[in-house]
Length: 354
Ligand code: GLV
Image (cartoon, rainbow, N blue to C red; front, top):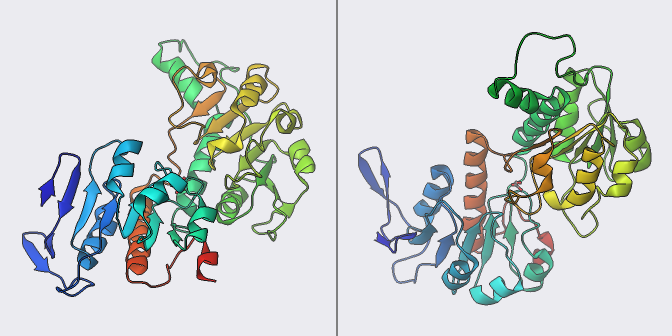
């Protein structure tokens, strides 16, 4: 094991299980140079150990914070396989720094807006992602935020901790009911549908806007304007693309009901935060609950943090133990397949194979 403090390299074809070390047959023979692999953070053991079983020689960035841009540009030079997170911007400059030998870039995320997919496809680099395994965790998070905003949980907890609770009061922290209310889901892919499934149990009527999706879980399709006019809760589940950037802008917010709650577990860039601040401050809408912001982390001087009717948590949609384990496994499987010259099990730019 070599270490330069924050990067650690393994160079033994063995894995420790309990007190024992097992030798593995690596995916290359001893007269071949092992591929150069970089993993940009310490990922869960499930995925990390799988990579080590196949390719014992790899380098892992082990610090708590992501590598700086300079560290990344330096460390990616000459790698054959890169396993990164959504904190790393994989653009033309970075692909130039990696070099033409790279066989795969595998991201431990379902979202790939941090990667220039078109550029990767042009260069023939398959990009791996981790769809499916984080659907339920993210839908749970959307629902947790929806309930927290509807019932003013974080605001009430701050009140209690500040010692302001004198007694039970008929009008203390009145919130919104879910039963009989309408939930509008913008983007009805895997996660949007998992939110609709949960909404059924809460007695919500569900409408969705997504021209490419079929109704599921008792939901009905709607035009965006109709959805905004009718919904008491609006939950965002579209990927961040050039088309969806600032989809939630002043006009979008002006079409929402004044009692409405906006929930965003997709990407911060989908919401124009300045417009959201104005809508929340002026009570144009009732509340917002954000798992994601732009930028991340949200600067501590963001005016959104002054608002009682805005809940913000630090991008935790997939943050459950099982989910992160599974994400690391899919990311490892994509990396291994790419290094072996096989088609990635989960490829975000399938055009690369055309
Ligand atoms: C999380 O936001 C992900 O894209 O995996």
